[in-house]
Image 1 (cartoon, helix red, strand yellow):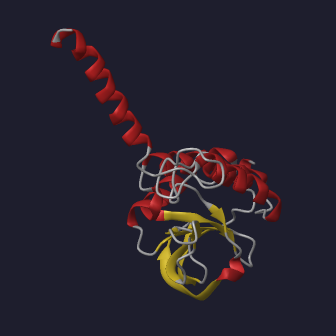
Image 2 (tube, helix red, strand yellow):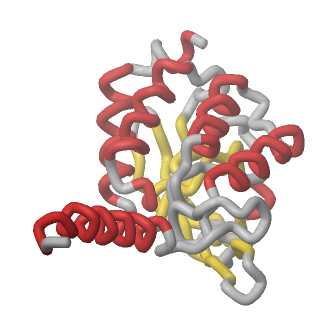
Image 3 (cartoon, rainbow, N blue to C red):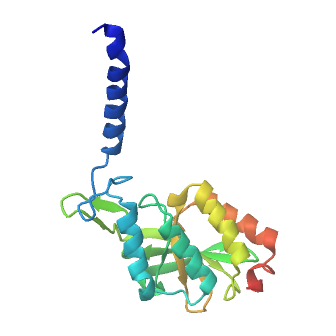
Length: 205
């Protein structure tokens, strides 16, 4: 048998080995046995867990609920989804005197923090609170529309998703975006988007 006749088999074997190594980088999920697509992240199991939890929370706004659920079901990692966060989870809330015609920004401490730390020993995600966050109140946002949230979803898909933790609702019944403290990129984008839509689209829903 000539070397030439063996070369295609050898090449195929190398390609298969490389592909298998790539699939095994993050290991298999201990629950379902499927390959993980990121550190500790099994898309099927995480999506199912999110679905099971849908009945345990609501923002009391269908557009916001759908928006948050969409990020959760399409997430490919721990920083790629949003949460609805109960306002009672925030402490030491202070007005930073930053804002404009459409919003007000506060600093706060999120006691639980985001579920972003993978505990290898326990084989589960844990929260890393307490952490300091920025709360951007959207004034008169009780009837925030799907059109406005679509603009935010585009940002969430294309920009630094790790700037954005989720949404809450304060005691005035206005919605607030929960962001990394001093998240200038998202903060600026929200200001620009609010000005562009002039809130008439936000209140259309």
